[in-house]
Length: 148
Image 1 (spheres, helix red, strand yellow):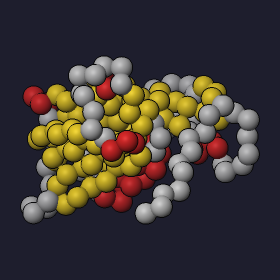
Image 2 (cartoon, rainbow, N blue to C red):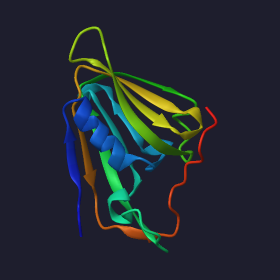
Image 3 (tube, rainbow, N blue to C red):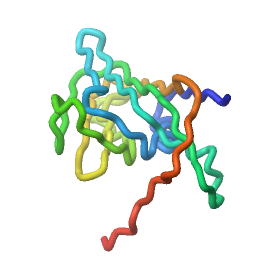
Image 4 (cartoon, rainbow, N blue to C red):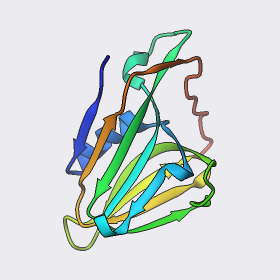
């Protein structure tokens, strides 16, 4: 069993976490901002791209994973109801936009259907951890080509 644990302390590290978390699905109830701790947490099911190896397969894998960001000063969301509980969000990418005072800025969690969460951060400090064994799925995420 390959349990993945990653830490991101800069934009390059965050792009690696983003690649591993691409197509993870989360229920809105599993997004949690703890203002007193300056922490934003997410727990969801990530698609194990590292196990798909680009070959045609009948089954793929998903893993329960946690992602959290420290040093978060403010959270904004758009395109979904954070109190929606069972609404499912599919993560497309995690980006960082530097602010006027380095190393601070905004971490953008970009979801499908135009949904997003913006985290104002003092600096990039994120951790991603698999929480257990993988399970099989027949469904591989598919992204239709855009006309843009």
